[in-house]
Image (spheres, rainbow, N blue to C red):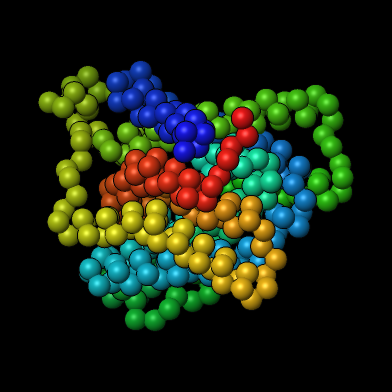
Length: 358
C-alpha cells in the first residue's frame, strides 16, 4: 500500500492544490477556461499522441476489451436512468447523472496515473476504454438528454419520453465528440504507430514538452474546476464586480445551497455506483470472459478495472450546463467521487496487488 500511495498521493495532492488555489483567490476563476483550453487543445492531445505512437494499434482497438467495457457501461447507464426514473428525476438530469456514473476521468487522471502505477503497458487498454466513453457513452447520454425535445409533452418539463429516442438523435449527439481533439490525437498516434513513422526531431521535442505538462496542469485544473463548480457557474469574461456577497464571493458565485433531500439519494447512489459497482461489474465481466476463453491478460484486467474505479469525468459538468441539466447535482457527484476516490481507488489498486516500479 505504501508504494501505491507514493504514486496516488501526488496526483490527488495536485487536485487539492488547484482547489485551494481557486478557493484562496490565488488563481482567478476567470483564468480557468484558459487552463482548460491549454490542457484540452495542446497538452493532453500531445500526451495521447505520444502514447498512441508507442502503443501497438491492436491494443488501442482491442475488440475484447471494447465489447466488455461497453457492455458494463450500458449496464451502469441503464441502472442510473432507471434509478432516476424511480426517484422522479427529470430526464436530462438523469442522463447526465448516468454519464458521470459511467464515464471515469480517464484523460485528465486515468492515463497518466495508471501508466505511473503499472507502466506503459497500461496505456493501450486505458486509451481503448477512453475512446468508447468519449464517442459512444457520451453520445448515447446526450441523445437521451435531448430525446423527445420535439415532443411538446417531453421538452417543456423534462418528463421522461414514452419511447426510445430515434437514431438521428444519437447521430446528432455524436457530433460533439467528433469536435473533441482527443480522439483525433489518439487516431494520429495509432496511425503513426501502424505505419512505423516518427515525428521530425523539433516537432517531436515540442510534442514531448507539451505532453510532459499535461498531467500536472490537468490535475491542478481539475481542482480549480471543482471549486468553481462548488461556488457557481462558468467564470465571466468581464472583470469581477466590486461588491462582494457576505461569503466573500461575488453574488453570482456565492456558495450553492446543499443538495435537496430529493437529490441526496441519487447523489449518494451515483457516487457509490461509480466507485464501487462499476469496477465490480468490469472485473466480474473480465472473469466471465476469461472463463469463456477470452485472451485477457492480468495487466489488461487490472488496467480496465482500475480505470472504471476512477472518479467521474470533470468535463461532464460543463456539458450539463451547456445542455440545461442540473449542473449543481452533476458537480456534487463529481466532487464526491473525486474526494472519495483517493481512498477507494488506492484500495482497488492494493486489492489487485499493483506494484509500481521504484
